[in-house]
Image (cartoon, rainbow, N blue to C red; front, side, top):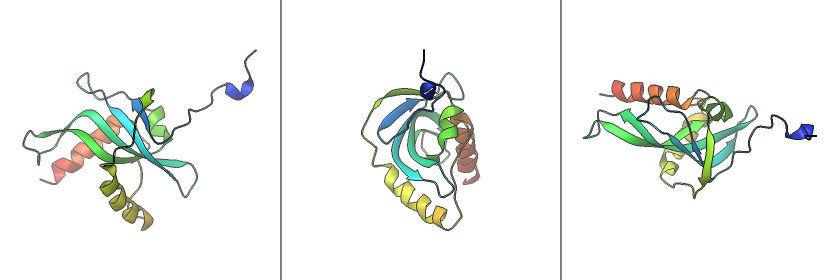
Length: 134
């Protein structure tokens, strides 16, 4: 008999974990690296992730495409809505630090938040924002 405490338990997410998620197309195989876990003031956690293995249109790049995002703040629902599968442990990527510092300043003043949508929706949102900066 299975212990009822093991049924439907959400995975424990922690810094240094690499997760594969569903992308927007067969050309994308997003990998989310949890760099840091911050407590959310309303309960829960905010995961400071880097995302690699994507194809996001970025007009400012010479190639017009970026394949990684160094800092994206997400909550547990992003993993759940993205069919996340644990890959392995990996050292956090320090490239997230400058984006995190900027986000934290804005978050503390109520001008920034975190994503709770799927990775595919996050990528669409980022792409629209980058296109608007032209």
